[in-house]
Image (cartoon, rainbow, N blue to C red):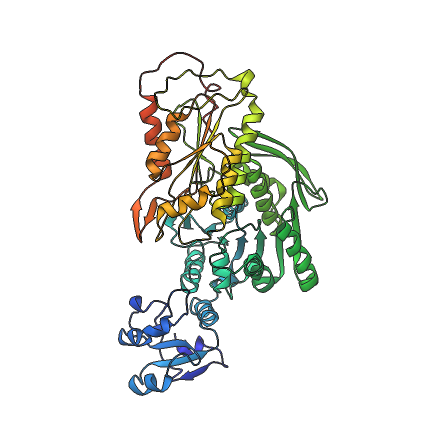
Amino acid sequence: MKLQQLVKNEWKVRGSLSTEVAGLSYDSRTVRMGDIFAALKGVAADSHEYVEDAIKRGASAVIVESGRINTDYYTDKYPQTAIVETDDTRSALAYVSDAFYGHPSNEMDVVGITGTNGKTTTSYITRSILMKAGYKAGLIGTISYIVGSEQFNAPHTTPEAPDFQSLLRRMKDDGCSAVVSEVSSHALAQKRADFTRFRTAAFTNLTRDHLDYHKDMDDYYSAKKRLFADLLVDGGCAVINIDDEYGKRLAKELKAERGGSVKILTYSLKDSSADLFADDVRLSYSGTKFRLKTADAETEITIGLVGYVNVYNALCAAGIGLSINISIEDVKEGIVMTEMVKGRFECVDLGQDFLAVVDYAHTEDALEGLLKTAHQLLDAYHYAGKVGRLAKMRKDRFSLPTVKGHGKIITVFGCGGNRDKGKRPKMGELAAKLSDFVIITSDNPRGEDPKKILKDIEKGIKGDNYIVIPDRAVAISLAVELASSGDIVLVAGKGHEEYQEIKGTRLNFSDKVTLETAIKRTITRPAFGGGTTFMGSEAARC
């Protein structure tokens, strides 16, 4: 492909427009012969410093921001390399990426899902609905990228523009007619998905997160809004949670700013005037039931995912399905068919007499939702009448008293390093308030001192129902040791992740595997005393 097929007329090009382009790169270390190299200015580094390195590695052209480099120097020394000057190299890279891969989003129904929490689960439910309706659907998200029968670990929720467009092209070439993509605030702020034609854009919620990157909540909201204001095509549909204050704001602003050029579908558990409304919600350890009401239909929905939060996720996915004219019957069946999502209220069931859950909750709002779900499950089963307590002998001083009529909620969590520090004490306060006992531990400390992070969390805790154990494996093991029949052990923060990042190094670590190991160790010990098991076989199973 020639350079002239990839650049805008208004860009200043020094060199030949007939230059052949073989590929795209935004990292000088990965440049191959014939690539275009785009110099991006990041938070920690500016890759304009590596333009010469890219040229020496064989770049046929480089895209730079006007005024950032001495272009005369490069055109004199490397006349074979074209220099493309733009006002915004991120936007330029997105434009070039879309063109290089043949505008793949023009050929498929592309769905973008954004929000602080719920993106991943909603994306999996949406994909299930699409597949039930006969679509071959790809997925781009936090856990993985799915192309046909192939599945890859995701290094980023939304990859950089060349990787994003390459995935879309690969999905189309594999026969996909639809793609579901999580779209993060970082990606929107950095224009990674720009020039993608989104047919449907969905907004789950907005709560405090990423304020180490965004200067405040308005800046965070503005980044999310770009999906709807800039990337959603005319004639497309916005699916919005109006139980969220920012969702209400978004719906109002879109109506005013885009008028009738886009359709808006609202969803709610509180406002019966929403386009999709859920009521009569019934929780159990094996899933959730609710009644879905739209202007045209009313139907009973069963989903094998637990908690009110998953009613919101299912409503959002249902709205997405309806936005592309999938029947309510296929929407319903697609929701029912959704399998457990890795690291999202994922139950670890080895036959133990308490519920053990791994969840990705790493924001204040997500942690609150997780803890409230646990309380709702305990309340729903009225433990005092339905469950006998299993007597266990405890030799450690951390044994907890029985809470009459309920099992206990034992929570293990921490906060990541080099991220928004303001949420740490808030999460500590919340965890202690809504748990019977909290074990504060390391999450991904990254480059920070883990002890400093733990102290930040402690500052928010007003009671004494907690202990600090920096070693995450030991913390999880202690939670299992403390659990009695009918309790719920929540391990929050890392979910699907299979590593722990400490001082720049990623070490193998899985909350699920660690929890399984601790449970196996406990249930293979000789039993003491008597008692009944936890509600038969259903209790520890989700």
